[in-house]
Length: 132
Picture 1 (cartoon, rainbow, N blue to C red):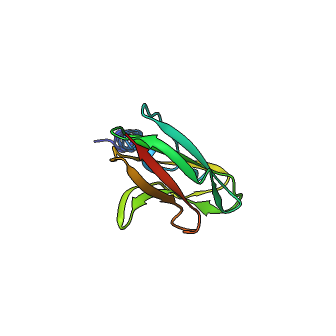
Picture 2: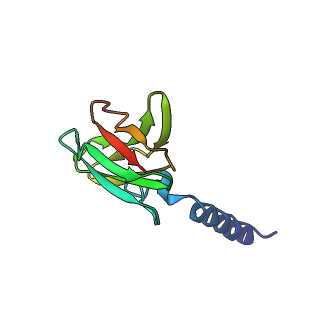
Picture 3: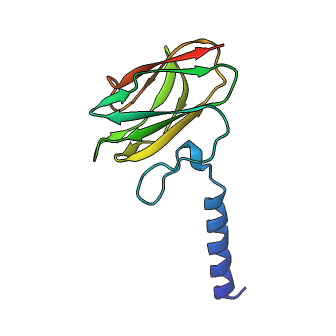
């Protein structure tokens, strides 16, 4: 096979592989920010600002796939967001250095209280209430 054809084929395979990745679960764009992709379930946005989560208490419905978008407003500071209860983790986002967006998709979850937090700054945490 001629080298030029082989090179074109290699580029095509590389581009196809990149296009097949799941942009909503932690892939990063060219600037290092996580890409927030399309989602049809319930979503809520939480801001990371001043090394705090705002709001620090959110409510979402049970029985559905859910998404929390983290809007990192802390310039030059990396944050992520994870959802857990005790030692059980239900989802974790990519790390994004602010300003930028990342997301975590998870669920469905049973009605209960859960925690969302930044793994880099564990004091940045909040309560996730899943309701019937």
